Image (cartoon, rainbow, N blue to C red; front, side, top):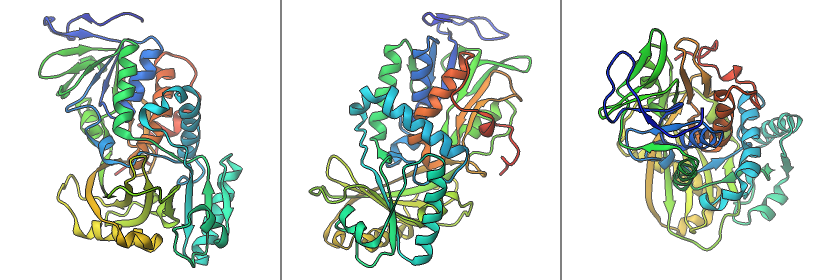
Length: 399
């Protein structure tokens, strides 16, 4: 299946001069789509990546770049996170400087004895699954993060947690994919799917048809709409989140630091505004302050309530930030699945359609493992993880 793109016709119609033919058409040029394109192209597949806008311009441009194991309880998502960690640190290690991969570690803090005990129960489960999770007493927290307020009940240290710069990640993964032979088609929204009977055989855009026996739906918050083009239902919903950015500072916060309640917020299905502090520095000196979650559709209006909650949460952990200016805020929409698991793999309801979506706020960190697993499956080989828990027709995946 190796080779370069060639001219070809859409199923059921004549070939236009600019119609193209590939082995795989990836719909969506965010982190997950870019990783899928890179690993598939490196495996020898002819790959096209299409995006309705600029690469990385959707959810990937509105996140903090989390590469975490700390916020995941035992189960398929933690398995995927641990697999992704191996991919980041082994297969992609030589490229990490391009996207500012920082193995800074994470510190989770508990304000009360009850939250500390719940955190320790979580770390015990994670350690049994192979995660490096170190319980930390109140006195040890200050050694890890001197700026933390006194009086916290305890916490946990996760040396494996890391961070990347997500827009750089997308840009360089696509550069590497192109170097391996992939074609990137920005500003080409997919308006329809090509079909041969029940089988999906490619995509249609306002400019051309792209024939491909495998179409990968990596469209993020729009993944449900792409699935609907094939007549299948995929309940991927937008979940809005805000981030505050401070003025550049000298090195102030050493790790990704967040409150123990964050894990519960990630796993909640509540549509109302939720906020738990997540604070970290960047190589540029700015401090990123998250996180909020709320289901408000695609409402892009700024939220004073959300921004105020972020500021209060940050000051509750790092009092010295009182004297620091916030210079901007940004927000975006995370692709949320009701059962809190991404959708990865072939869709038996529409043969030829594959999915790589629904990762919510973990998409950056899970992109490496997701892309590698899909490339393994697309080439017909065994996958490093069983994809059954992520199947698009699994029980429990309902809005």
